[in-house]
Every structure is written in structure tokens, then in C-alpha cells.
Image (cartoon, rainbow, N blue to C red; front, top):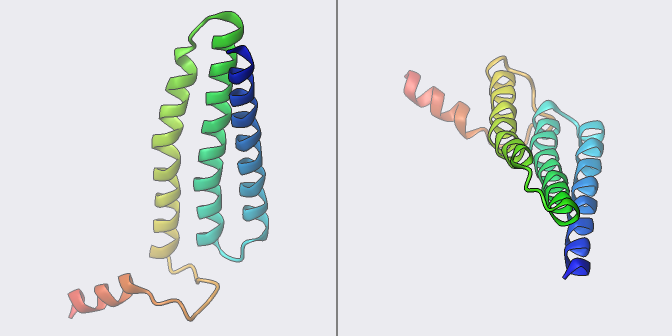
Length: 117
């Protein structure tokens, strides 16, 4: 049983580290604020959650202690990071930060034109 928990713990921590690295590359390489923020808020959130869950399992297995602080950290990151990402994108959109590709259909702008008329 200990080997299975070690495999699950290692997999979660490795997956979380890989997702965090992918998020870092996304923030560096993607062209505009909208796609960069998407990479940062989605991939990094899932990566950090996987790392914290793996850490929680590790300490539960080795010391027999359930760490409720790690579970609370997972819950708070799960709630706050996507909301913060959404607010940053919303602020960028409302201040007319340009998108990288002008072939994207902007449904929100079309809806705002209809309601303002």
C-alpha cells in the first residue's frame, strides 16, 4: 500500500510541477494579455493544487498527520486564482487592450452595441 501512495504522491507532484512550467512558458511566449492570463490562471492553479495535494498525501503517509492547512490552501487557491484572472482580463477588456489576432469575433462588443442602441 505504501508503494501505491508513493507512486500517486510522486505523480501528483510531478504533474503539478509540469503544469506550472507549462504556465510559465505560456506567460512568456503567448502574444497578448488575454492568452497570457489564461495560461497563468488555469495551468498554474491546477499545478499548484496538484503539488499541494501530493504534499498532503506525502505527510499523511509518512507522519500519519492530516494537514488541514494544505486542504484550505487548495480551496482558497481554487477559488481566488480564477476569479483574479477573470478580473484582470475584464479590466484589460474594458480599457480596450488590443487582442493579438483581429480575426477573433468579439461577441461582447456586438452585444454592447445592440444594448446601447
